[in-house]
Image (cartoon, protein in one colour):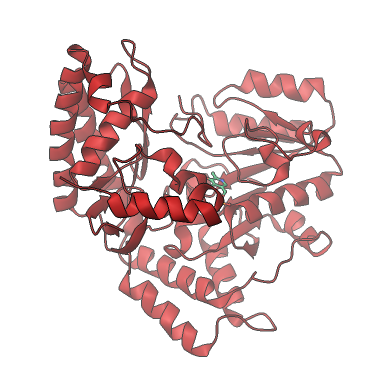
Length: 431
Ligand SMILES: Cc1ncc(COP(=O)(O)O)c(C=O)c1O
């Protein structure tokens, strides 16, 4: 039986000096069953991580998606070490910036020009500021999660501290609901600077939705921005824009492009990107060289080893097999595994008096005991080998069987002993 006493004790100490005891909501205690899951990781290798209590896990979260090749991936770590010998950051730009920019231009349809950031939020905020400067308009329509900055988070339930005036400029619309976006445009004619959206999360785009959003956005004189922080370097090396054949005016990339190093990108058409020279998008750690070197090595490795194809084929095997297990246990009416094979999302609904959180908690607790770090998604990495996936599938067989009985016999709540995932907050609402 796995125990988490060190994690628990350390958590109390950490929370006295670090609010939330984490830098990221999705990595915090809010996502894990209290006392039944680890809260801190000390190291990782390949597809595995080790917690503070020295338990080993197959990691399906992969640092919230950046770890696309695997932990301590030699080619990338070697590139980082080689750059470290030359220096981390300099007083003038390094030639690596041009090298990476040229590579991205070659791969990503909209990337006629690029600028680099550190977090995904840098890239989305930069793209939005640029769109506002280009159009001289203020309103932004959004669909998805786009980071922690004021311009977007005003549309999120957790928006304390964002000025009303800024909150009023962001307008949400639902995925696959073109009529809703049309209404928003009609209500505020000539006021929208941009539509910002994730190309896809759990739902497939229906009836050329992305192409239609682009056309509608342009009809209303706004810029079409794709937030490819997750889909980039996963759907294809050219992003979801290449996969879905829809080239945006601007796009944001981050996460998977450097196997865990902090780097993001604003990419876009030259006619807009040139105006980057007039707006303010500038920060000390832009162009930090270890991340640039890591991105170049990651992309090179992804090309050489056909990593995208691997993520899709291993992901498809896992996704199809998991769906079969869900069906076999009669769970498919309230648990679905959606998304594309390279990034799969469990969508869980309330069922027979049990809340989605209780059901998710039950699954997480049982998987953690089997050495699987799980928070409701399959964030595929190149280090997830067949043997790991087979282990995961055997675990699902056991856990989903237990869940079926716990629901049928009405024992689920009793088995949880009141311990459920505390986070009634998630950055993304799935359907
Ligand atoms: C689609 C999307 N956009 C933007 C962001 C913000 O990126 P970051 O957390 O690196 O600032 C995220 C982070 O999860 C994301 O998933």
